[in-house]
Image 1 (cartoon, rainbow, N blue to C red):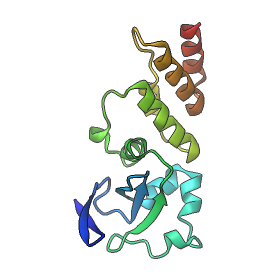
Image 2: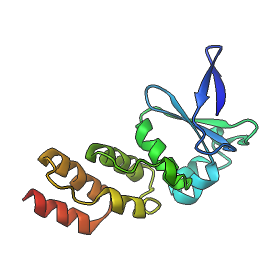
Image 3: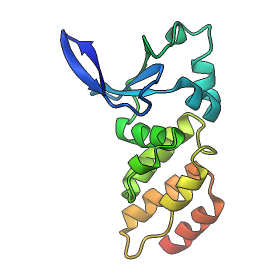
Image 4: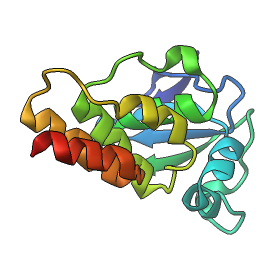
Length: 161
């Protein structure tokens, strides 16, 4: 795990990609995620545009000197899981997620146009849950809508009714 300097002290950077060329600085706690810009560019038109050469954030991206992209309004835990999936780090993706976590991931996926890249992971995450509370079913319903999964949207709607 690499470190970056902040206020003259080293801070660990979770290596989603050890040879990553970008550090995403996410959420109000400024969680740092080292990633491969090319993985996100291939998965998302939004990230593709963000990493275009004309953006100042994308200038000089390299694994020797990773660039930093500030995403302070985003959910760091959701974005970390999202990046694990996109970087094929399946061993690091939690086997079970709470319905609220699924919704937070769906919000980030929708924001960055990553629903296609997360299609197969979202199928697992959106499966109906036995004895789920109504609020949790609502989270899964909203997540199914954001992921564009019509079948799960209908299933969760019928369960709520």
